[in-house]
Length: 220
Image (cartoon, rainbow, N blue to C red; front, side, top):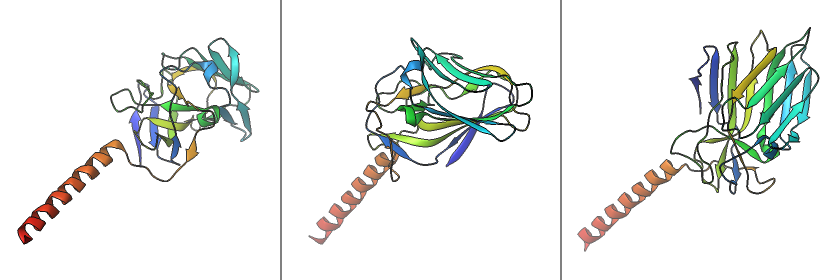
């Protein structure tokens, strides 16, 4: 399953792709700051096709990020706030083609749902949004279940694709995250049911049981 929505910026598209399904036992709570995501993998691809892979680390109280050659990405404070991620790219000859974030390597997941259908231990989330006006496609992939149940609000990875023109300069964006309760507790699994699916299944089983009872009493 894959779907997309239009963002607040005219050139922004946000995609949601199932990808590989993962499961974690539990989440920690309702706030994740920049210094709570150490270990995330961030890979930048430049217009000359070279890549730079960096590991997210704490940079101060409540802050974290990565700094590569000609670029940086950081978060100051709670990721649920507005425009708390800052991406910077400054090169005289190159542009940034895309940026890939594997939050799972930092015991973190992206929370995209701002509504009632939320995983246990996860409050309101926010999908990617930005005031950047250039071409940009943000793709969430690899859904994450909690306690063997898939609620549809959590994803492991986020990729930003800046199209043929690439990106240069500074942009701020919103992308909410949650932390795993146990370090390293995110593993690929077979498909698991969503709450609505279980409800329908349970209703169906009750209906079958009732039908069988009626048949039994008729035979008696």
